[in-house]
Image (cartoon, rainbow, N blue to C red):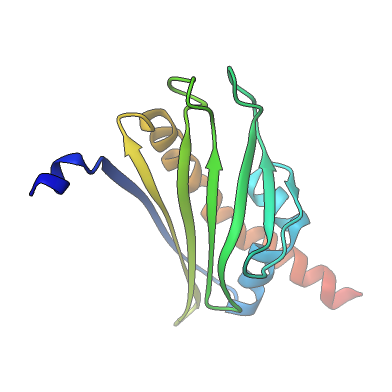
Amino acid sequence: MKDAALKPDTQDIVVEEILPHAPETIWNALTKGELITRWLGMPTSGFEPVVGKRFTFKTTPAGAWDGFIQCEVLEALPNERLVYSWQGGHEGNIGYGSRLETVVTWVLSKAENGTRLRLVHSGFVLPRNDTAFRNMGAGWKKVVPGIGAIAAEHASLKKRN
């Protein structure tokens, strides 16, 4: 009981969509750097779906934070599951840009009309990460459905070439 009182309250963002594409098409959109940059809306550098691979996203800096999100691939099971750490912010910041140490998990499963894509962005420590939790919760709800459109466009271009 004593340990439970010391554990901070954490929250997860969960977004689930059924996209009208094969898991392979969605996986491609989740694992190609130039496509990630398009659906996420942040420059992506160094991403490869290889366990241990470190990469970054770049967003708007705040206070003592330079705007870089440091990530590492923790799990990569093609067409099924992708997990990476998501760390950014700075201890000295309050609100936007506060220290953030979270994990992003993508799960793909076949659905009757395509692929069920489930995102779980876990580990938001409240109240410290309230702003990130609120902003990213709203953001992921817009981003996840858009992955399907970018995946379809990329698949269509590949077929033509």
